Image (tube, rainbow, N blue to C red; front, side, top):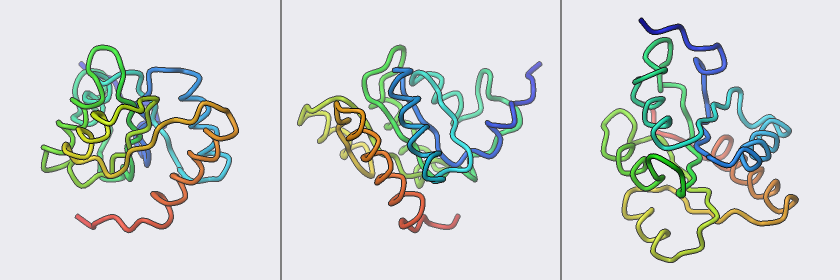
Length: 153
């Protein structure tokens, strides 16, 4: 029998898929500092992201993706990589309209091309410096949460 999801996972506006705890904390801090997301859910790998998005495993009760406005997706993760998560998100009728921003340390042209082929809405290489990383997350949050007009479904 599954348990009810914690309150922070019921009304999520951003799903952060990131295996590096430091990057995840910096990203969440930058988004919250500028009040760009009411609720941010952080999952630590691609398998957990797929469970979250498709209500499997620990995420079988109490969550609807209807309020999800953005997925921030790392590529290099354990268990299931970001490209596979992207493929499944964009091939599913319920999730394909959710914007996915690849936010990764990869600078490989092949990752950029493959991400767009699979339906990524944006590809951003993570800056190395803390200040630059924070500014980048702030700007992407401003665009995707305030300026972008998502489809109504």
